[in-house]
Image (cartoon, rainbow, N blue to C red):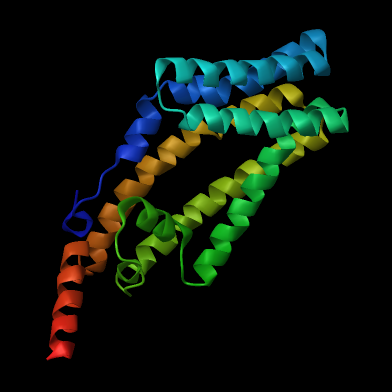
Length: 224
């Protein structure tokens, strides 16, 4: 942890890497869908994937465990199954994820161009740090740069999976979704924390605490 990150934590990255619930709640449904679809067909695959997600939520409730990943998995599976059944194609199961990644990628790029990088907004929401600190000329560049990496991940995922949809490669779609999902996000979370720590040090801007003290001092002086 650097002087720029007083009060920060890499909890999100460590939690994602260590929590097995991520694998069960969000990765298992598309795998089950692809396997069952290959053996029993689309309707059975939709029923199994959705039934599994509902069962996971029920299990988490009974054990009083965190529902974040289970509900995320259920919501994603419900939308994906609806798309697949409406389209009558197994590949349509992956369309909602492709669209959401494309949208996130475009929004990330737009946020950089608007000088309000998405990763800064996300960080502010998590750590409750002053938004004005993120827009400091010696802080914002670091967040803009790392937001480009997230934009590349989102757009890359969408592009690869869209190509596989066009080729009707259901099995490879599952592989691509898993490989570019949890593992890639966890790796980039860790890289984000490391990069921001390194880059903020070199930019030489104020730490969050220093910025707050400066802002408090300015406010006090202005009232005199």
